[in-house]
Image (cartoon, rainbow, N blue to C red; front, top):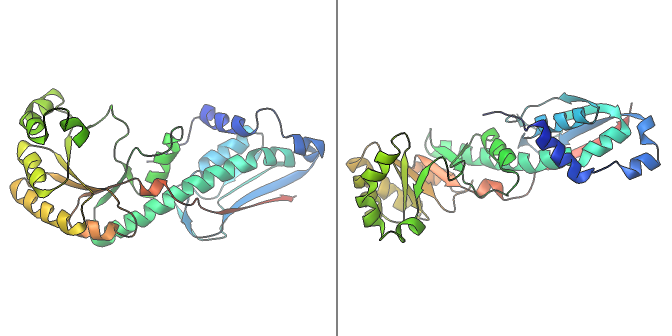
Length: 282
């Protein structure tokens, strides 16, 4: 899944930092100096946001070069993005491009680590990112997730059916919801229906009621393994998703336990990647 933000979205990010002009650069006449800006990572990482950085510099009138596309793994000191233009143009785009690259390459890199761990545990286990990303940067967060090899868990509440405890506690409990699951599925036959559970008994109740996806919340790998075995015997087609506290350190164990999907928000919250930015006269 590869896409670039719309020009209007990139322009909005630029306007936050440069609503009018660069006062410092204009005072020292940097617009009269031809220069080049380069972005190189200080550590190995998975790239995300280089297309947006290139579009931003192009918008400012500079000539960008996209050296590495989003989704590629690069070693430290390999140039990911560069641009040529007058030094004032480059300074106006510098920090916005750096922030995009660092924040979203960080998400992509953490996602990659989770994906690699999951594949060590069981090939084909999918890593899916939740909706728990910062408001306002959904598109770039999803791009970073996909750049790292993951997929969205839910794009929003309009596109999928997931019954949580907050739903079924209002509807008479899990058993009551499961008794109506066939009717729920009949109303949206093109959608898979997921039910979140917290134990083996509830997982079996949901599986026997016809839940397409059993999402198991906050249980250790050993418990996941027991649920996988029991559900597979009763309903071989059911998908088992493990959620709650899953990260790069335990993804392998959860995948090895048999989970088909690892649901996590861990990739969204952590230290940004670190890029070195150099502006030099040409």
